Image (cartoon, rainbow, N blue to C red):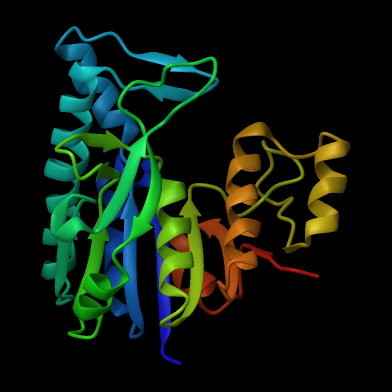
Length: 261
């Protein structure tokens, strides 16, 4: 089975032109089939502030009202997505930028939460694996913005980590998939303020232990939940680590490996 890399790039790298350029150079050099998923929350927040659109967060999650949806669609699926694609083309990597509505690539539904109305936030139902495979088989790198749709004409803001996980799971029937979460930290850290405390390997049992001892910082827990869900659904390996070390992450020589026991 052919290899496929699904790589999520963290927002802090997207916001930094120099680091993003370096990352795209490294990504372009990867020979295997590849999908890149990006966010870009800071730029969307900054633009909202300039336009006087208040941002509401509940437990770190953005509430997406109608005006915020316009902003995130413009920023994620417009400026950032096309900027990333142009950067890859400049590095001789043929790429196509998509959101979930393009080619019916990612079908979702509006989140139905018993207590919180998240607005136009999507939870994923289906990945169009045949469309994505068709592009990958033409040696095109696919770049996804975190906007999905419901097939009823409604766009939905969707968590980029979750999109990466669902893409990895969906494509694992067709490829030997590795899922890489790359961001500003060197991996999962025992001390969030000390980049040298990287945990090299986390099993499901060790994850429960770390949570029970409150040794894992809150923002990392959803990433790890996603990682184990991906492994349980057929993804071969999940790596979490520093975007600047992408080549080492691809070869499992850096970052934190998430593994089933």
